[in-house]
Image (cartoon, rainbow over all chains, first blue to last red; front, side):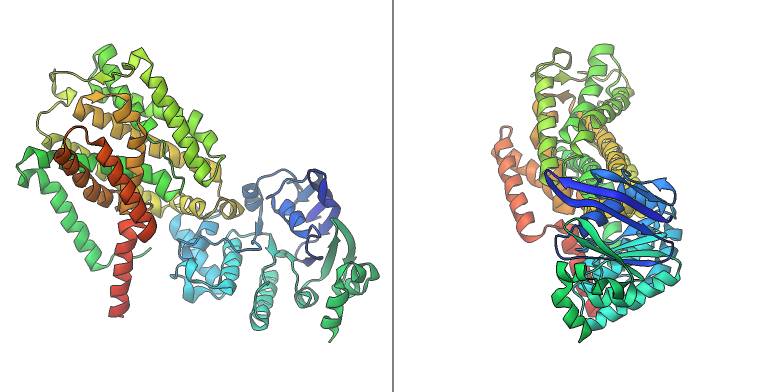
Length: 242
Length: 324
């Protein structure tokens, strides 16, 4: 299996934010993680990315045990991520931000620069290469985070609400970008609130509720699952079907 | 990277010529001495800048490394009769050891907590030195009273020190320039931007913080040795005191922390100011120095957190915007 997380528990004191969650992902698919606020999907996501250490359970990626590995080890092995609230390097230009990622596989500056320019071209940020990162708005920042992650040449890309806060037009552009990334052979796990995104992008959805996985399968089937509807999607469903 | 605008190249060349020719043009020993002190402050602030500026880890305890360099030079003289400069490499090694033992654990802390821990560690070592007879306890140590050979580097005129310090500063700035263009420079900037994002991109944050600390501590220690050689004296307050740490920080922040020439610019502004107020108000003048430092911290924080370098860049950008 490409990525397999088994029985993941993440407890904060007595509270189990993630309570025995499983997920398995095949190469080159797009998997959506959904669930209401506080369902534990972000915590689970951070466990996958190495940002939080699971209390128990195992995570295997490309036949390696990554359960307690550092975030930088994840990056080296080919797992990259974006953050829910973008954390771009404000003092640096867009190009320099991406170069930080590119240096992982290209230790020499000119190589890292060439790689970064390719990634900026691919993500449609080439015209902003010389702008300071702090001059970007939310859509630009989210896109820059994706570019920076892609520069590390990942096999698996973890997107944490990469489309939240975008206008519908920007969402469509972002969806196109995610599809393009998949066509490069990269596997994608996406945490998302916007159902439209999950329904149009993800091949499989995994639904979290109170730290547990309550449903998984094709997104259309999952949103019709009564357990899911009662957990949180009730009012969303009507909007989606309109 | 950015190419330099002509006005930047002009400023660089004029600055270099003025600094290189200063002690030859100015005949008054008081002003010659200020020139050497400016370069010494620029060396220690540039060394501080590697960690505090480029990596964004604001140390307020760098006096530890400065003091280690100063004391190492003079201890080698008082114990073994070596020329003080021979103690400089020992000081660097001692600083590396202190950096690894005391400095590395403080990297577990972030932001202000890191800064406060560095103060605590430095004060602890100052108090230890004040009670340790080998390093002269509270009285301190003296260098060779009369030069025994050229290797004692003991000169009455400040001019030889000026060129010695200038050579060291050029080496340090050349190294810094190379570093900021390399992977390490980008990684340090990423660490300054945020540990979490940096790690997600595969930056081994702790390892690079330690690299920056070792480089920074080594050059700060060298600055301490040079200070002890020029002044011929070291005591806990003048080499290990908190004012020594604060001065490095202020000089760098005034000129622009995290920029190549920021610390030099800061030293050119601050040191003459400090020396003339000391001369005007007599005595040690440390009270006035504290007030000047405090005022500068307030002004930088309120009006120009990026220091003179940021001011300069914003003026350049406005010019370029007008031109294009």
